[in-house]
Length: 418
Image (cartoon, rainbow, N blue to C red; front, side):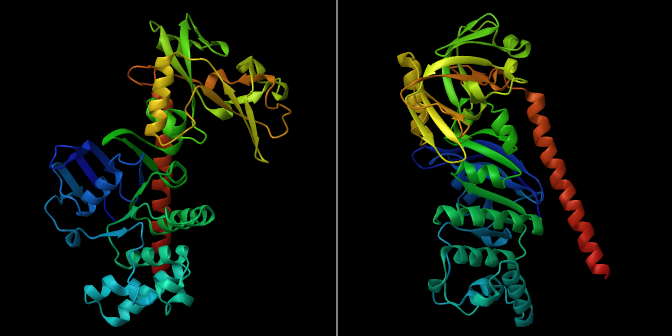
């Protein structure tokens, strides 16, 4: 295993376009780091620079404390799993997994031991004699992972490995990758454009936008304490709602009425006139179903419901609102950048599946005002972000990972003594 450090990494092409622009990132030994962002944000380019498939224009790439800018991919001792599996169709599963060991002229008995151990871990033992064409997509991806495992590399690199699989299989493979990484304890960098993968897999997540690093934090910190408008809109499904708001003392006047801010948030927006209020869909409720014990923790408002969607375990209500042309255009631009059609002048509200709110009617809603965020519409900065609370969320994840590594080392020591 090895830590990976990037210091001011830049990748510019011949026409001057900066695909990656001054990215600095520390990936701890044994950490599972996710690189996420919309298409064209530079995440795959950054991964390819780690492995050595792309030259670095400027900056330093360190693996295990050693600068590797000028090292060839084969000299970096990294294992990469590609989106398209990159298996040899004429070779059996056994030989595909064994391929890097054959190149290294590893003795046959050691190859057999390592391949069978990887196959057992990945539940491929009964498929070792089959060819890739006779395997399912999930099985092919496990073969590609097996080939990475046997190398005993310093780190694993995954480049959107699940994008070719159907939704159900993606969920299964996410679980397998997470289980595998935890059991091996190997440093892993995982690229995806799917924020669900990012939130469920990563110890920490690095969000990129047009080659620039936006925020690096645990999934929970990204969700609860986003640094800016872009991160808030990208993380979460459905995405965060953004409402135009006018600051009136310690309250925000929005298209849905006036919402009172607590003392901390009010002090953060003091001096501002026009802002964007952000609130996630699940922080709304049907006012008639709100527990009385928490009703005074938020505010109620009445709005016209355009459409409702019933999903069995949940229900969404879509509430249109009026906004200036400038705000409408800003939300439209952000929606296009995020490859989403949901950031428009409408709020998406998550309500209980038992709610009787229906399309085409007025309804009363409750919103938890403790959970709102306020953004500067020009810079996109989150004005009300609680930095201490966010840092605590990520610190807990780091401590959990270190505890897992300590426990795994003790288990390995115990096994060796038996």
